[in-house]
Image 1 (cartoon, rainbow, N blue to C red):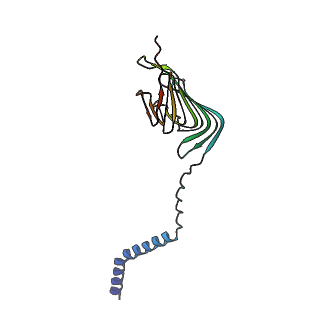
Image 2 (cartoon, rainbow, N blue to C red):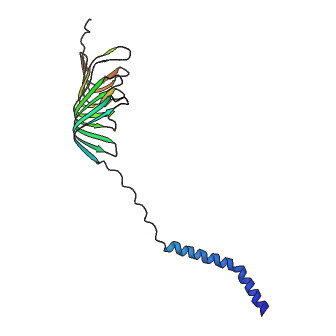
Image 3 (cartoon, rainbow, N blue to C red):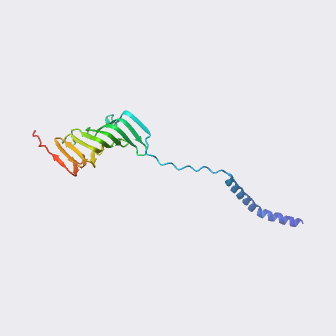
Length: 205
């Protein structure tokens, strides 16, 4: 009897770790099933093209490291759109100073600018004026004036383009065309479509 009991206890000791592992696995399974699952985070809704703030009768100025005025944007109403980081402005007037201090002024019934106002699209009675200046080589740059229903001004790149009819007045010369691509740095003007021009003779000094 005693030998049989010892044999039974010996067999139980052999299978006890297996039984305990099984019980542990069952307990873990029950715990996982009983624990409430965390709510899955809802997918973020796509950003809508809606303004996040408005401005009325405002003026925004930016300055360089030396404290000199780089640009000024004045408007009646403005709406900022965070999805594109653009600003839509009604009755806009922009002043921007280039590297050499040359002033460029832009006005229109409506404008769309990027975050730092270095790229501006002008809609309705668009008018851009670049004041006369002397470039780094000492050459005199005449006053340039651009008019049209649409103008796109890249102020840092000193470039003005349009896919709609424009009028260009450069010094005493006047041109009209269906499209415009003016690169001030490269000193290249591309006029396409129905191009007309009036060139005034240079005045002897």
